[in-house]
Length: 269
Image (cartoon, rainbow, N blue to C red; front, side, top):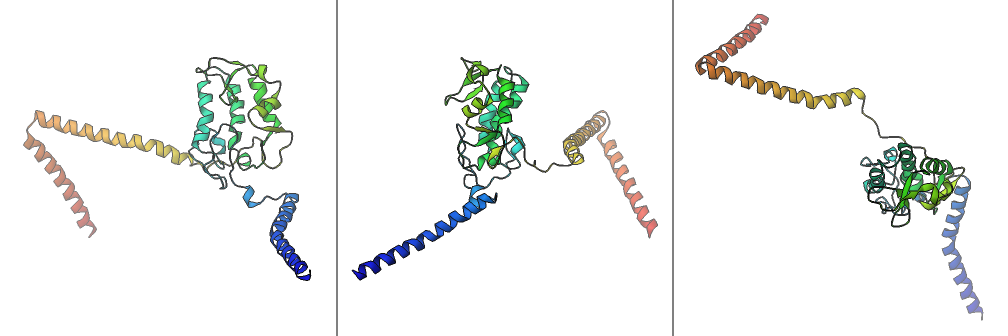
C-alpha cells in the first residue's frame, strides 16, 4: 500500500513539473495582456480572411512590400503581397466606368484593410475595423450597383456581371456591410483593428534626383541624335567632294589640335 502511495505521489509531482512551464507561460501572457504588451508570436502574419490567398509571410512579421500594385498606402509595412492586391484591383478596374470615384475611393479603403499589418497579424476572427470606415463605404456606395462574387462577397458591378443591384438594397447600414465582407465593426479600435491610419511610406528619392533620372535617357538620346547627324553631314560632304580632301581636312584639324595642346604643355614648362 505504501509503495503505491509513493508511486502515485511521484507521478503527480512529475505531472506538476510538466505543467509548470505552461502555467508560467499562461501567467506571463495574462500579465502582458493586462499591461497592454504583445507577445512576439502575436506579431506574425496569419491566414487572411475570406477570398484572399494565404500570406506568403505567414508565420513571419510584416515587412516592406514594394511590388504592391494596389493598396500602396500599406507597402511600408504589410503582410500582403502582389497577388492579394491584384485580387482587389481587378474588381475596381472593371467597375471604374460604372461607379462613382467617391465610391471607388471609399470601397478601396475598405477592401485594402486586409493589408493593414494589425489585421494581418490578428488572431481574432473576424478582425475588427473602425465603424467609421464601414459607414463611409456604405454612404458612398449605397446607391451604386454591386454584384455577388462566388463566395457571396459584394463587389462593384463590372462589365462581366449580368445581375447587379444597388448596395443599399442588400444592407441597411455600414455595420451589415462590414460583416458581409468579413470584418467586425467597432467604435473604438484596440489591438488588431484597422482604423484607416496608414503606415510610414517607403523612403522617397529627392525631387532633383528623380528629375535627373527622368532627364538622363533624354540626354542620352540627344547625344545619339547629334552623333548620327554629324555622320550624315560628314558623309554628305564626302559624297559631294573628294574623299582625300575630307581626309586632309580631318588630319589638319587633328594636327592643329595636337600642336595647340603641345604648345600649352611647352609653355607651362
